[in-house]
Image (cartoon, rainbow, N blue to C red; front, top):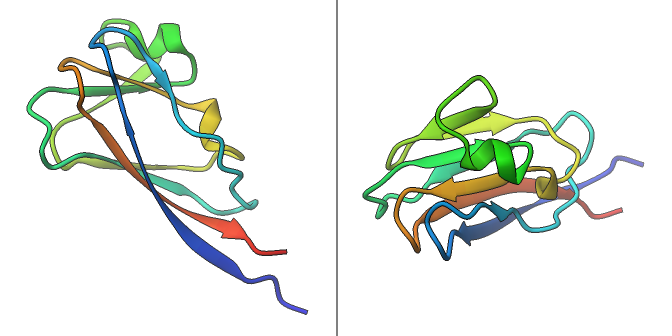
Length: 102
């Protein structure tokens, strides 16, 4: 029997600029990437890191910066392993991933 995956579409925003937000708890099947895109309505930058401290840090090798509409695909086992920070309160990302139905 073949496993069937279904897409999930999420949004996550940062309430207070400079205070990282953990992405929601969504398991991702092995071998599947999650796509994270900075919202098209953003006016500032979004930083993605594997911890709150890394997301909040100045641009470095420990985080990745997205401008309005830019995206990155990452292979992680759960979206909650990622944190985002925004330079403008209320801005954030859209998230697209596949989920196991099994």
